[in-house]
Length: 231
Image (cartoon, rainbow, N blue to C red; front, side, top):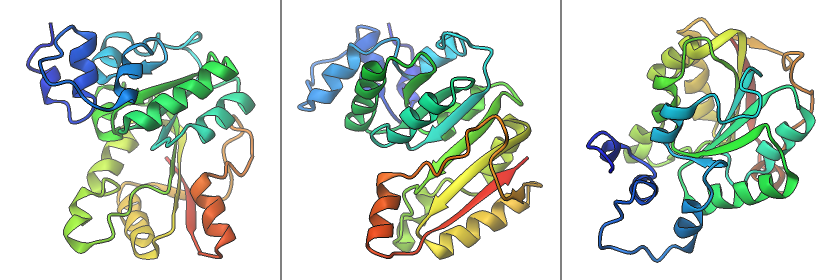
């Protein structure tokens, strides 16, 4: 049975209930939700991660890298394929995105890649301190309208929590097409002793890791901004 704590999670509540056998009377029209129920072992909810992490990976001792907002899984796949010496956990809050990401992982047969239906602020609190080697955060939702800015998570609270979870020398690679947001992110990060570095740490293969959004911006000649922050 799902307990009261599980019902407070912001994302994946239906999947949590379904896997615990508490679906209720309301049946969703989203076919990706039903497919998600069957993807245990590749697609995780927060309660499942709390119980099983880091043993969800074949080799749980490998350094952990998060992709926050993995969209359809392209960067998760690229990271896992070119970096067999790390574990990659992709996060997203949309059923369609996580299901399509898992399909790619299954097709590629990557033991070091998993997906979670959650946001990063749900995940970070229960991870051990200094347990994360790096985070890729490419083109997070900028919430452009002023009344929506409160939904942005790349603020002081995030960087305070991220700093405690990152290992020494750990990194966050950020990309966004919003200059004002980018400047705010840098200002918030520097309050928590993050410093800018010019290249990825040696454990990560030095590739561009270009996303669909980045390709679109490049084709349309829309500028974007990026930084690699180190703990």
